[in-house]
Image 1 (cartoon, rainbow, N blue to C red):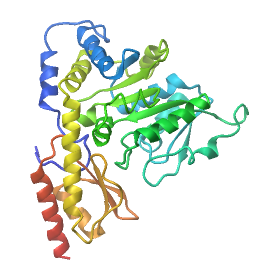
Image 2 (tube, rainbow, N blue to C red):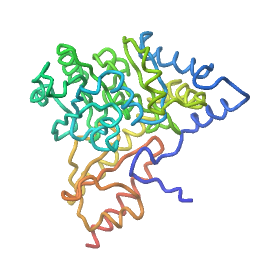
Image 3 (cartoon, rainbow, N blue to C red):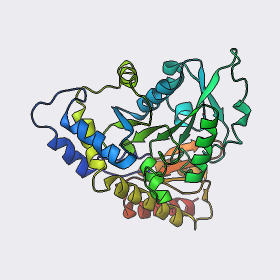
Image 4 (cartoon, one colour):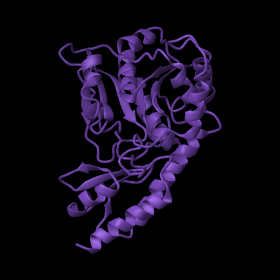
Length: 344
């Protein structure tokens, strides 16, 4: 099997050794299933240490499940969810949020993955008009699908607006660790303190084998356990999910992993900045680098270091770094790119 590290996705990376060790340690004997175990209690306690005592935690298999559960818990089928047009819930979840929750998605065009109050004002009408889906949730992604990061002030402004309209703010935090490192703030400052109501907390992209968590802040969550079960996201052997989160939330492992991934993205961007034929298209604020490159070098590059084309028309690609990306990977990649460009 190949051991080459590419730049396609932080989903493609392996599992952090400390997380694997936590899974192994949890693998002894029998414990009660479906979350009624010491590992799950310990992981919930860890989350409450980070986000506050009024945090309710629901572990799930994946990010799509986390987002769908969050939407179902906050809204009725006649409601609508405002989100960026690039949002994972809008582009990459095969319509699951709309199919399962019944809610309509209202995408907002954005150039950098971030929406603003001014940008979604066009949807702020027809409240109480029974012929139109009623906006109930604003969903933002942190870090965004374009690798950019909302400032705490930007989040607070959206949260304040949402709450003034009787709406909720959901944050898709698939790469929340990378965003917190980028802002040099705590996870709580960027979420609870900024007015976020529900957070899809990502683990898989930050060193876990599998597993995400849905965090509800200062809310009644009595119905969420039923929603999780109906959404096929209740893990019977939950100790393995919980053990991973105990590991990632201990000794700042989440932060160390994200710091490394972000640093590798900065190094990649810096080395590419000197190449005339490469145009970086977004601010490099987390662990993603977006760039326009000559079309003819994409395929030979992909054969050695797999990555995805983001926009074929613009010849724009996406390179993602991970907790296990090494400087030698970046050096080899940039060297190959220069060689291909020189041979054109």
